[in-house]
Length: 117
Image (cartoon, rainbow, N blue to C red; front, side, top):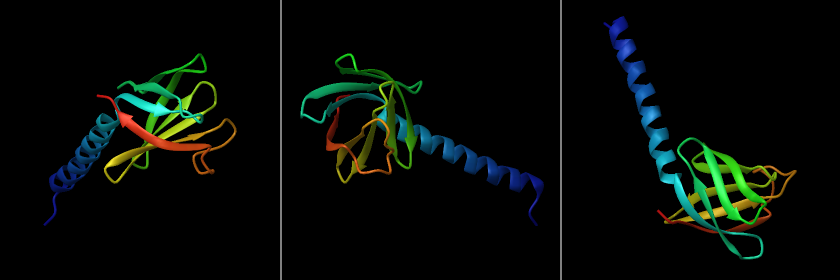
């Protein structure tokens, strides 16, 4: 016989699992990344635990926000550019999207992404 307690315990287990999975994934992406722009120049992007992002790509990409979407991280820069970092095999790949496009459009640029810490 299934009791209300058993239902509650099962629901609590699912909620805790989902929370832990999301935190593990977010932890995978938090930190400093070496990325490359459309001209092959390297810059750093830092993803903070609070969902903020900062970058060293000149004056244009200094601030943004990030979140996990479908197993990848999506950074929305104040400039309108969007950066997506996803694990593919044993490497990470960065795709960028110019202002006015979405992450379902053809990327403006694709390159390797390297986590620094």
